[in-house]
Image (cartoon, rainbow, N blue to C red; front, side, top):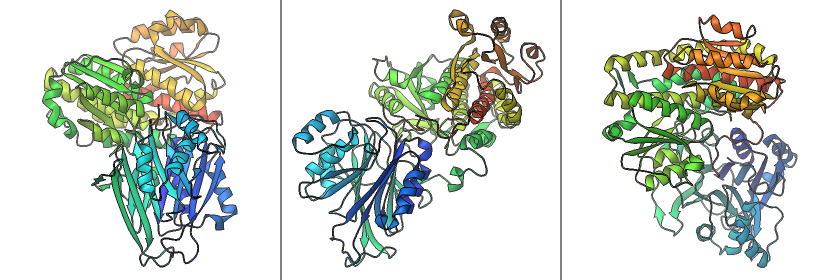
Length: 639
């Protein structure tokens, strides 16, 4: 959720840190801060530094303007920076990161932190008795002052010792003015990666903050600590820009050294730029035809009637023999998982359950022999989903992952999985990742189904249609102006319903969520038949009700539900199959969004797209920040 970027090397650090924070803005935040280690001219490696800090509420641009007013105060080659999404404590400068603690001998510890410290209240009481003064309400301030209290002259050793006293989740970057060329980082339950550049190291919670500087990275695992050092080669003077001596090591909390594998980032800097679009969300909606093509590329063999998923090959027999699938996720990914439940039961004939990860992990779930748990997450770092996956693995389940980010925690902890390959998603409201998740879940259902009951010819027909989906989506997004014209007429209404049946019920949930996330309109998604069992009382004159009314096995039932809403004055907006002249009798001119005809199991890949555009235009027409909706974070890495 929060964003970390830190640097130690031979370059001036301030502009690099500000740039990194801007690349992390999409994650969601409410305040930002920076701390830079200043060293006197001609200082040696052993000369103490001076830490200068600046914090602000609001956008990174506010922080940047403050720093640029006094640039001489932020000259240095070691620094840490942070974007905060409030968990403990209000949105104030006092609660913004970095935080500072004073050691017994007067040195300064400065820290940035993602995660939550669960035992912070007990630790705060202890530290107050030890004479520490607190200026805010943040659990991070407690962690900072605990490191300061325990500091013994060796920052790495002190961090190791301190984190053994911590309950909760953390990704941290810490500096101390007594050790002006050393940066210490550690993680448990919150992502943190280390970029290895020339004469420098860059620490970040997200690869987007690193990719413009290096593609060589190390992924820290839980309970690991990294000490990163960079200083003048001759150790006699500090000259920014000259070749420096650099070294790093990673250890456990018990100071046992760990050998780390250097990996190559699969990310192109151009992929995280706006490329002429007004918003990332619009760019990512419009990218979906190409995203689906990339997701499908090399994975479907229409002639042989088979799906090729290299990540699942070694577990194919185990999946075929599975007695039950449990799909688990949160938010948008949960809606994709719900579609996956329908797909696996229909195409693979395997009993399935779809669970909110946050509920699953705290129940006493029944995991029998032959249970496969499939976790769905764009980032691969969603805290609740990761913990649900770990709980299932501990109980003996086979663990699969459907993930977008290569090298993420989930991709490393599952027994097998499939990457989305849709490219980085910057918009907080997920669009192309959702489509990618549904595409992959469709392929998994066909992969298993072909090995169980589906004939070669039937799978070939599905794959032929699946191969046409990118072109179909390209046709749908061309309706963006028509969708905007429709939304203009109803955008002032504060309560909406989204209704669908079968495969389109999860699409209704997703459509309502998108509208809520970025336009702040109250919306409910539900099965169309459920409307009569209470929610129909909400319908009044002019209330927008969006129906997923594509032609299929339950089309006549949906039409009946439309009649019920129309009779009570609701204003019908329909997503319908091209050529359906009947549906226009129930809607105003321009209130139908058309999708090509396709088999029911594949309909969500099409019907979702008009609802993404509907939500986008609603937010834009209301004058809202589409890519940075209030209170939301891209990746929820805390409970």
